[in-house]
Length: 451
Image 1 (cartoon, rainbow, N blue to C red):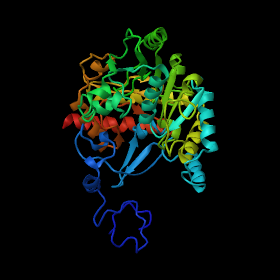
Image 2: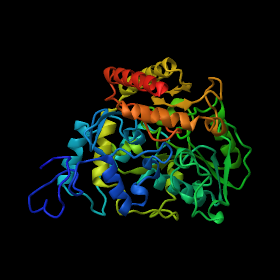
Image 3: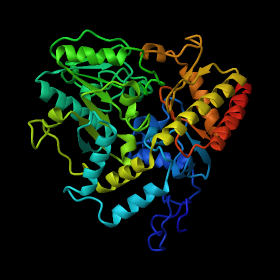
Image 4: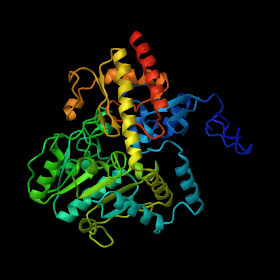
């Protein structure tokens, strides 16, 4: 059964030399069977809450393999993928350059707990492309990047208070879970249990796209420069410029969370597109070519406060992992200005085909575009106007989205299972692939409207 996605008997498969992709007992491979077994040993059957389909209902599809713009589940069903690891995959799944880089690095060992030249080269590559990042420190995830940025801002300023914005999601960091975007919004939670009041006592959560008057005890303002965790909400004219000026006025640091936008909107990220320079930037997703990684970059004087040369502690055995940094270097070497022109064109094309499919089926929906990012908003509450803040984004019709989600899935299009996510196209989403999405969505929505 070598390479099979069928089931085998785990009590005999090793002796038989079996290396089946799915090995969970006798029977026919099915998403439901694997999910139910996973739920016995993994809380909720998933390792990231949104994957459980709680917001849309039903059983998650279990991915067996992926290539380019497509994924296949364990039942052999092919899906055009608009999740792309929530933006982490930009070249397409299993891109040859990434696979080659990972394979070559793995031969040299997978983890050392010691410095490597690759982490230096990746830091240089980021600094060359993002001028605000004079120094870069690697870690293992976007969440670790935002938590480190908060600690660094507090340690650098000697202040405690942090300002965030409704609908922005900065990962699973206690101090930043006072409120959140897609991660908690999709699950219908105002925040999360397990975070004591003390952890968020110094966190102010304010309306997105409104410049606040800061007080002199604010250490930092952390913001998604383009909000991609509430269906996609671009910054209003003057918003980011106003934050920069207000931070300068009171001596606070401006932190851009570019975990989604960094190297997805362009070589310089969102900050280059909006022409606003932050003090610190958080990265993730793309800079590891789809592997687990995160980073904080920023001004040299601020970054020098990190240990071992400063008093703000940060460490991690897997930080700067040789496999992830090899993949990151490979993806950055593949991207250039032409790549982003192409991605922007494909984002506009995707928005158009989805809009047309919804219009034909009389499904009220909007698919706003900002550069290479596509958002989605279902329902007619805003009368065709795109949302500009979290309260407006929350007017999306979640029940309608759930019906659209399952109609799409049944016809071979994979959307993220939450109404507040962005849609991600990559360089593998050719015009032919996007047109296929349009055809499948037209059929799916027409079928759903009749049911």
